[in-house]
Amino acid sequence: MTATLDNRPNAYDGAVSLRRLVKRFDERAVVDDVSIDIRAGEFFSLLGPSGCGKTTTLRMIAGFEQPDSGSVIIDDIDVTGFAPERRLCNTVFQQYALFPHLDVYHNVAFGLRFSPFSRDERSAVGKALDLVRLSGFDKRRVQQLSGGEQQRVALARAIVLEPSVLLLDEPLGALDAQLRHALQVELSTLQRELDTTFVYVTHDQEEAFTMSDRIGMMRDGRLLQVGTPEELYDEPNSVDVATFVGTANIIPARMVDTNTVEALGARFRVEGSQVVENHDRTSACTMMIRPERVHVSPDSDNVHVPSHPEGNPVQRTTTGTVERVTFSGSSLLVFVRCGGVVVTAEIPNDDSVHDVRVGETVRLGVRDDHVRVFV
Ligand code: ATP
Image 1 (cartoon, rainbow, N blue to C red):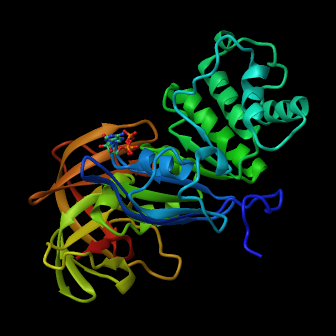
Image 2 (tube, rainbow, N blue to C red):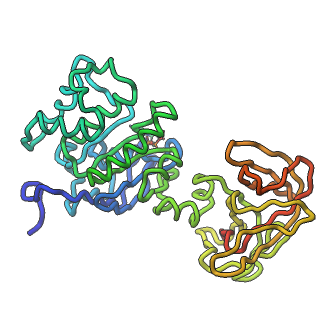
Image 3 (cartoon, rainbow, N blue to C red):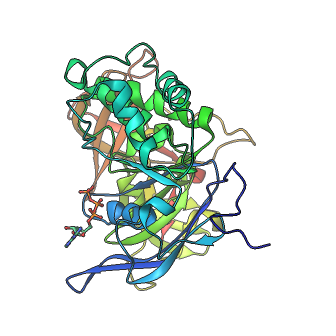
């Protein structure tokens, strides 16, 4: 039997499929042919710079915007034409708009009035407040709450309806860094407890990495890559993803043959999986190296490179001059000029590294398996 909203079982799965979604504003496609399969129970983030179309995508899932073409499917039901309240989704916004004249209990209970499903109000609100660690706050007025507590009330108001999909649009954006960090941990714990699909919009890479099972990276309305945080970081499919996700050295390079790439005056041997053939075959070849993969030692030393788990690492070395060193607490960033390129190395702030000085000639070491090439 085909599932419809009326004959579905109580426990919904919450799988969301976006099929070739397009949304235009003033003739400009701000969401451009986006297809994603979000798994039931997954913490999925849409990540990308401001204006790339994340919120518009989320609003199309919620039903606040209609796509110009494409469809939104939730648990095998095409909900594209459905009004928001018929989608079994709920949204938490950055501006959480609580009712100041109501106490915490009545703010959370408010949504239940419009729910098509009947629930025992007191027990549903109690359970939701318990989940966001606000038990005992029932009688408090909204003005008597901190920013973090208000955000948790907004979350409780959304989860009290037991949506199969919770949509969150930069919900921590208004909070200070410390509180943000604490709530990130709480949100991922909450998501696991609820086993609800979370679709989370953020432009903050660290936030997306901390919480998400998988991330969809967007830019200029397009979906660039979908993957786990590790996949996006270690195996980006483009220079755009490599540079948005963490810091990357992007270095001009030249393919000598299918397995050899030349850069920084050295030749690296690469596997096919390290080479990404991008859309534009005529574009210059570039090599990507993460700063923590660049090892720095005095010019006189042999570079120490940690051993490869499957055998001896093959390292390539080059020399350069230290232009700048910046301190960030747990690590140092060392900027080394190698000919026309400045390579950034991140080295741990511990006793294992030599005291790097500006103007010094140093030797840089990079393992073959730590480079990624975009052709
Ligand atoms: P941010 O992180 O800044 O919220 P975003 O990635 O969520 O950005 P969207 O809010 O989806 O981006 O906006 C994508 C583009 O569409 C932006 O250029 C925005 O100005 C434009 N846009 C969004 N809503 C409308 C609208 N109702 N009318 C016209 N243009 C719009």
